Length: 196
Image (cartoon, rainbow, N blue to C red; front, top):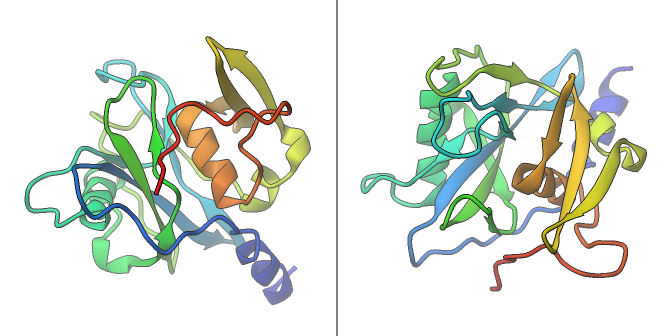
């Protein structure tokens, strides 16, 4: 393994965009990327069953904006610190993914992609995090690990991650991060795409 494999893993990131909405109120998530044993991993959390939305789902750390966040980057960094203890100063923002709408939440969500080195010391808040998962990017990039279904007219992607199921908006964000298509085989886009 070694340096060559690290470079190949970082090259899997193919869906970054430079811009994000600057007007309006948007929720935000941090897509935290860091190396474990010379391979690039992404952090996901499992939400507890007592949460008001997305109970038991896998998600990136994030949430609603606060007045003093200063925009989606501030929201994502604050929420990641609150939920899993990632220090905001440790995050190098690489860019954004296209904002996405979720079925259970009325605001669009801006995914902020950040590189962290070294691997952060994670301190999950038990009130917001049931479990931390750290799947490798290379495994998530394997198209045969994904499957899709139509749910009430929506195209939904699924992937097995550490004995859990990644699906819905977080699955779509993950696929976009890796440059995997988010369109259904018949060419229909998922519902609620943000238009620039």
